[in-house]
Amino acid sequence: MKFEFTDAAAYQEYFGHAHNMVRRSVKEFVDKEIIPHVDEWEELNEFPRDLYKKAGDVGILGIGYPEEYGGTPGDIFFQVAAWEEVMRCGSGGIAAGLGSLNIAIPPILSHGSSEQKERFARPVIMGDKIAALAISEPGGGSDVAGLQTTAVRTNDHYVVNGSKTFITSGCRADQITCAVRTGGGGAQGISLLVIEAGTPGYSVSEKLKKTGWWASDTAQIFLDDCKVPVENLIGEENHGFYAIMDNFQSERLQLAVMANMTSQLALEASIQYANQREAFGKPLAGFQVLRHKIVDMATLVEVSREFTYRVAAKIGAGLTQIKEISMAKNFACSTSDRVTYDAVQIFGGYGFMRGYPVERLYRDNRVLSIGGGTTEIMKEIISKLLFN
Image (tube, rainbow, N blue to C red):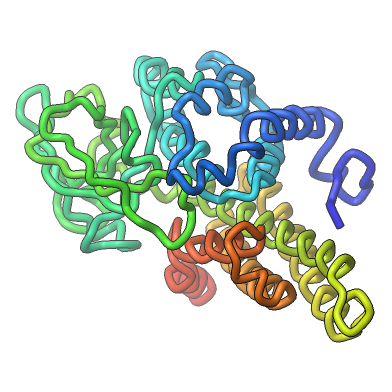
């Protein structure tokens, strides 16, 4: 079972001919430049830096971004199609690392000046530089309003002190879109600064060793009296929290898409394995209990994907979907939890072995309900909107 959009009328509400051209283009890139090397890059715990440049040269990094800054504009489903095809490489780490710009540069494009967009967005879209988003802190996690990294203005610079952790692409990032405290406590005192990796006082930890997403470099970043030019402030001072919240809608959509694709890949692998693997003289697919398990998996994947698409369409139409995207992320992650678990069970001992796709999908899946706001944080957001 492999879902295709080129001849599936049910998906034409979201994906038309132009979207499918993008999908085919990204698929060709993934098939040629990524899939043959996935196992090697996973073991190396990183993929080559020049993959960014290759992806930038063929326009993949710029899908959905303004043409004047090197992008290829289009509606939200151009990006969804691209994200899905990159995930088909089977490595969440590669997808997350290559896609770190999608959470790092939107605040610049939405709230930055023309000069900032040219300086900080264009080189990333072109694949010449790597960008990361730096929000989480060692003592804060999902508590964005409680962040402790400070930025004190001194004439034409901010002096930044603090640290950030769990930063995807953090080891190799040339720049970070960094949340800092420029004012008082709470959400009202937060700003966004672009901090370049060469800034004195900017240092990076060794790669953090993770359960999954092996091929993405993840780091803790230390900021020790970093002098950041005032012109690197994105938007207004003390208004960064609102830009972060806007950005979370897109980040949570990306994670929902990743979760749905993780489920889809695990489902496809399970169907293939059930047709090929024999037990007691017949294929696993000949056992009703296995067939029904796979039916339940397929149903969850279908429902989750359709809900995510519907929320994406509303976001693309300019509607605020804070509650709905939180629901979609939670549902997609709950689905991928269930589907990857069941896929490993279907594979039996082989599902626990390296080299089998469901083993990696199972590991990579675990972070999806943590990144971009945990399941518990999503429920708090949803409950506040429901009861208020």
